Image (cartoon, rainbow, N blue to C red; front, side, top):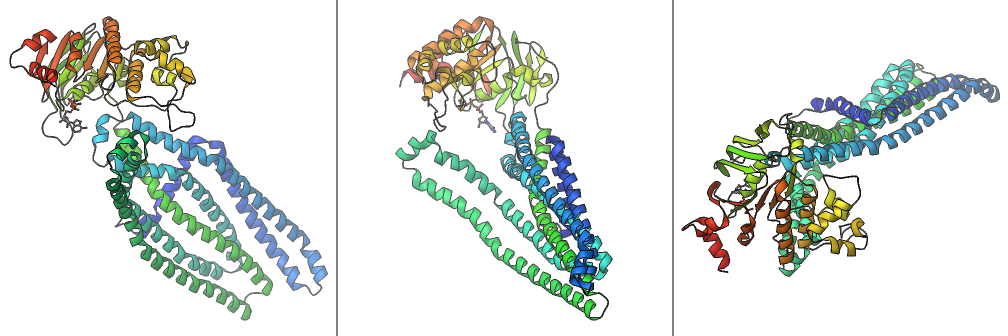
Length: 597
Ligand SMILES: Nc1ncnc2c1ncn2[C@@H]1O[C@H](COP(=O)(O)OP(=O)(O)OP(=O)(O)O)[C@@H](O)[C@H]1O
């Protein structure tokens, strides 16, 4: 942007028009055609109106008897009035069609973006600048409807201009040249101002992003207790204010630049307008143009002037919004490249999951989070995965579930390499309770069935709630299964931390997956809840592979096998009794520490 010339920038407008057209065409072709036809009709209306006015001017001003002149001009005046009305009607219809089109364009742009976010590989989130680019693209998506509006007014300006300019050229070509000159400075001014605007935005996109993220932390009820009780407000206020200042500073620094550009453009444009009126007067005084024709020239020049103004204004706006639209399209192209596309092999619920020297190193990290690991999990087994913070447990879970592919080695589900398997088919067999689970602002029923809706009744939903000890609580909610779980929304109900965890477990159990993974599922639960969950796991174990990640080492007694992960390596493996008794072992040390609190 810094180095782009005005010409290069002006050249972007057709591109932006094309992008907008394609977007609008993809959502509602009928309305796009309506807008285009109405634009054309409104232009024809203007041309007919101006030609008729030119015809009427002669008898109106040339005749000695005003009554006779009016009579002679009447047919032309009627044509002018009808053309004017038809033009206005076309414009109104175009406006109606755009109003129908715009919300659809806005939703389509937004939906595409949100959908792509949900489809990209997890590693995309680790790419440098991904969140900033996503934020810039979001602005593009928000502006998509504005651009459609700009495009309509801009193309209308062109149609009007062509009509008026043709009439004006027939009257005297000089007038057209001078008129054009009067608008060019404002056009340049508009484009330069748009460039400054975009630069300001671009310079503050990171600060905006961070501020937007922090805003959630400062305003959400989830953190309201912590924020108040720990007197965090003054520092957070200072922090937020600093981000506001940074954004504000960029905008304020640009204000004098806008002033200079606008003043210069208006002054230059004024000089050319005076020039046009002077040429018109000169032509009349020198006898090269009759007064009647001069009258028509004034009407035509006013129309052409208005059209040119709207071309300039909306061209600049289009250019401005088009820059964001560019960000949007660039982001879509990049995000599409990183959507999860592994392979086409569909898998079944796994009877055996095997890691074959699988390792993983996060981008921009030199040390692997997981060193080459080989292990096998079998259907019917309950395996516990333990280890200290940062040992690599969640990373291992992501590999086993195909959420990420290993950077070395292979993960095989019944012999199928997950790197070549269809990711959706893999995830269809998984039930995952992650460390941080979503408190989805949906009804209880949707919170349990989310991801695997079933048509036939609520029986299985209640069963899942029962397994995690939530059925009594749900029955007492104001609307039972229909209770909306979002305190921030009208009529919403809030759950406790432990209840949310129980619901996340219910969701995973309801899926009846082939591979059930629970990552710290009971950290916020009471003893009864914990007991219920582990009972449910044991009951359901025969039909699936179960993996439990936990720091509460008492809980791993129920596991058939325990894997102890240490700094990205499996250090120990065995039953609870074996590991507790192992002299100098990491598990026995951690267990002893947990007993010694
Ligand atoms: N997205 C990421 N980008 C870079 N490094 C990461 C990322 N996620 C995790 N790591 C690093 O990988 C290592 C293993 O992290 P992981 O989350 O797998 O540990 P964990 O055993 O699940 O820890 P905890 O018990 O605290 O949940 C850590 O050193 C962590 O800093």
